[in-house]
Amino acid sequence: MSKTAVVFSSVYYKHNTGKKHPESAKRLGIIVNELKKGKLSKSKNWQFVKPTKASIADVRLVHDYQYIKFIESVCRSGGGILDVGDTVASPESYEVALYAVGGTLKAVDLIMEKHFENAFALVRPPGHHAEKFRAMGFCIFNNVAIAAKYLLEKFGLKRIAILDIDAHHGNGTQRTFYETNKVLYISIHQDPRDFPGTGFINEVGQENGLGYTVNIPLPFRTNDHIYLKALQEIVTPIINEYKPEFLLISAGLDGHYADPVGELSLSMLCYQKIFDATVGIASKICDGRIVSVLEGGYSLRFVGKIAAVAVARMS
Image 1: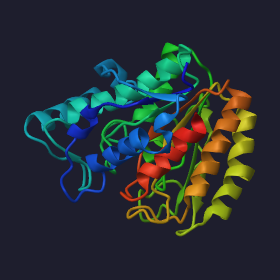
Image 2: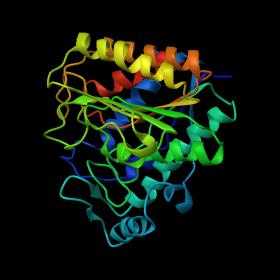
Image 3: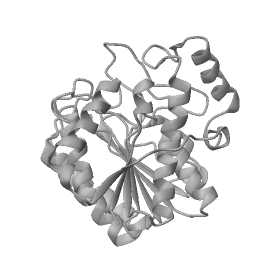
Image 4: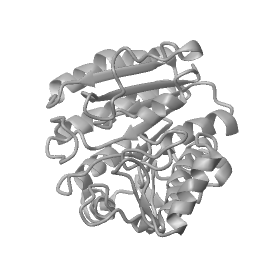
């Protein structure tokens, strides 16, 4: 049995954002090409698995029904802009977004049913900015948030941890779980004043969720040393104390120094250490159960190599 499933389908290429949009099908193609033809191609420790399509009921675990129908309507009418300007839908985007959710849930099922130890959901469109009633930041449906709700409701788990390593704060995921202690949400991200305007250190949850949201905003151009120090001294102890039954990673790869959208200055080695750390945490606490889900990452030169590093460390 291979250790790691990489959930992917060419259906994800059909979400057409336009030639100049950073969240393009090309970035996914580069990742797939690196996995198929790079150093990992001969490894038997991982394998591709096809996604299934999510149901409306799955998406409604997080999103309002009228919002879902709005997305469907926009796409059926030819596509368009879904928010204030940067989230684009093409005619195929509704269907593709259902497969993005479905691919993430497929990854969860594969782990919970013990077919694989862990998984990387290589999906698009990304999800962590999407909120209950709106698209935002290239995101249509919140894949990771839906996966967490799915774990709670289908499998009856009591404690899920989400670690968001995207360069931008995952406002949608935070808002979904802000009032519950069943999901611990931790985000390490760049200064959020520019975008998305959430993710400050005083945002810590409320009611039953008080203390279960942890934000670690970092200055622009933060390097490996500071980032890894935050991971080691803040993130790891908190997750260890929480003792989650499952670890979800919002795997934004846009913290790399060459990324044209993110404004951190992380190296390839830093990503290796991030995934080494998360695999180590999961092995110790939750039987190695991790699903990483692709979020950002827009450097066409480096995104394939970073994703390959993630799969290599997971497998």
